[in-house]
Every structure is written in structure tokens, then in C-alpha cells.
Image (tube, one colour):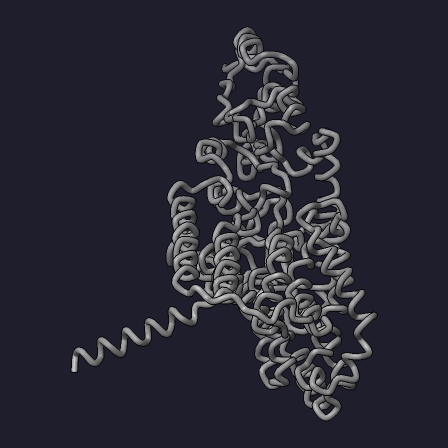
Length: 543
């Protein structure tokens, strides 16, 4: 009995080994490469403010719809359309830290490309040749943040559309609208699919139209309610005006995007050459090939307008290109004998290398992962610094997470901030002329890049350097050197003059100067240095 079971297992193992063909080896190597690249995706500043928002959601039991992270717009309305992603990301962090967050996002990426592989109507080797170069362009924006969920839901939506399982679409869009604003892209795909269905499957058009209407209503079942679409469109307009790098158009000269431009050109060429033949092909219509092509062509303008939209476009373009390809001739009828044992050995070695690489990177916490973007010493000094903080847009997300007791000046949540403030901050960083902003927002502390013009300006004006390395500086406003009666004098000179005039008010240290904490003090609304100056000028003495 035991011997029979063992023999059966041996036969199964042998059958599995024999099935490990060269085509399967290619697929295995491709997905190991995708998994490795995804497992090493870097955390960005958005990752950290998203997790902080998720922590606040879990702690308070409510969705954050008002700003609580900044001192510049504290209490302002925040149309938070990614709250579900934030809650999920922080739950993963609480479960196992950044390694679990990153690995889960990597698994989502691999699953998304597995769906793309299954939806590509071509032989395995053609799939391999199509996807391999395109992954280079597709991985440019992989990061643990809400966009990862959209990268999965795009191919899921395409799968449902091709299978004509329209009844699932409203549920998908309900979840998507609470995860990420790219549900707008999904809605555009639905419009393209609805147009294609009029030719591809007229009898299904009514069902698809009803599903599209239900999906549109489902997107309003968010904390933003019926304002969801208004807020998302307004957010997209602000982002365009801010000229954020990932929203810039893809550049022709970017080596990482060569595959994107080739895929786009091939898609347009094949659509012009083979579109009519595909239209007349009954089998292609039954398999949803027109829907694939219509969705890919609909996403093409979005990809050309913003680098951020390139990966989702490619995930639809690959199956569309395969559907448009003419039947490929057999280069050789003779097939080489398979070597399954060798194929399995190569796959095992590749898997070992991939797993080992990820394990070493996670153990050493290599810089590429972005898990420690700010030195702990800089955060310690920042927490000692008095006064409202100044920081750039780019570092705000990091500071929200790593310095939770400080309110930021700006961060990647562009929605709560007026465009004028962001424009002023960008202008200040460009010219170094930041004084007006600092006065307006009562800033007494700054976290800035060491090489920035603002850092040089503040140091020249007498701000004290609490921390400095090759990348970051923490500066504190010295009440005796900046905008005071003693501006331009050394601290010793100020103290000497106070003693000479027998001032009754002791000269405070930098730590107890109360910069940025004047509310509720005897000299509310004034700096302590101003009070001392007034006392010195009046030569006040004790009776």
C-alpha cells in the first residue's frame, strides 16, 4: 500500500518534470524577473504619508477628510479618495513592517502581469518576446502606494470585459473608487469597451451599458459621495499645473521608455494595417479582441501625456498587439527535443538567486528600498527644534511619518494646499528668497537639502545649524540674529549690552526662546527678543 502510494508520487513528479518545457522555462524566468524587480521596488515619500494616514484611520475609526498633518492649512478640507489603500498599507505595516508592505505590493504586481500573460492571445514564446522588453518601461513607477492596486484592477477589468462577465464590474469599481483615483482611467476603458461592443457583440451592449451605469453610481459610494468625480478632476488639474515629474510627458530620449515608444508605434501601425481584418473576423470578435484594441487605443493618449500612465497602458497594449499580429509562419517544423531536467535546474538556480538577492537586500536594508530616507540623527535634532517647520514638497511625506509630532509646511498630498502656496514654495526654492514665506507662517525651524539655495540663505542670515550632512540640514532660527534689533550682532554682544543697561529680563537660550509658541504667553504675538529689546531701550531697572 505504502509502496504503491510512493510509486504514484514518483510518477506524478516525473510527469511534472516532463511538463517543464522550454516554453515554461521562459515563462518562469520572466516572472522571476518581474518578481525580483517588484520585490525591490523603492518606497517613496507618498508611501510614508499614506501609511501615516492609515494609522490615523485605524486609531480614530474614521476617514480623514480634514488636514491634520500641516501647520500651513491645518483643518482644511482634504478630499481623501485613497483612504482604503491607506488603511490596507498601514495594516500590512503593522503586520510585518516595510518588508511585508513591499512583498505584498510585489505579489500584486506579479498577479497583474500573470493576468496580462493569460489574456495575451499568442504562443508562449511570442508572449515572452512581447512582455520582456516592456517590463523595463512598466517597472519605472512601481512603489508601495495606492497606484499598485490600479495596476491590478486594469487587467482585471479587461478580463471581465473580454469574458463578458459584466455583473462583476460595479463591485470592482466600488472597491477601486475607494482605493485610488485612477478609477477614472478604468471608467475611460469602460467607455471604449462600450463603443467596441456595438460592433463586437451587439447583443451584449445593453448589459454592458447597464453595468457601466451601475459602476458609475458605485464610484459615488465613497466618503466623498457625489463630489467624488468633481474632486478627482480638480485634483488632476492641480497636479498638471504643478508639473510633478511623474505627470510629465514621457521623453523620447529616455532609455527606460524605448520599449514604450516601440509598443505604441507597433500598436498604431497594426491597428491601421489589420484593424479592418480584425473587425471582419468572427472568431476575434467572439474572443473580445476588438475590446482589447479599443481599450489600448483609448489609453494611448493618456500614456503620451504622462509617464505615470505608461505602465497601465502597456498592460493593455501587450494583449492588443498580440491580437492584431498576423498569423506567424512556422520558422521550422522540426522541434528540438525537450530537456525538462535541465530546464527545471535552470529555473531552480534562477529562483535561488532571486530569493537570495531579496533576502540580502532586506537584511541590509539597502538604500534602493528607501526604507530609511532620513537619518535618525536629523529627526532627533528636528524634534529639538522650536517653532513651525519649513520643508519642501518632496520631503513632507517622509516627515509626516518619521517626525509625527511635527506639523509639516508642505507634503505630497497636494489636495489640501492652495496652488498659490505650492507655487510660492517652488519659487522660493528656485531663488532662495524664502523670507516672506517664513514670516507669514511664523517659521522657526527648517528641514532642507544641504545643497539648496534656501539652506545657504538661512545660514547666511544667522540661522543655527543643528544638524548637517551631505544631504540634509536642520536649521533653527536664532532670535538674536534674524529680524531682531540685534540683527547682524553676535550673541555675546547682545548679552553684554543687556548687562550694561542692567536689563531685568534674562537673556533666554535658543531652546527657551519660545519661537513659534507665543500664544498664551505674557507677550502674546511678539517675539521674546522684541520684549527684551524694548526693555533695554527703556533702561528698565528693578526698584
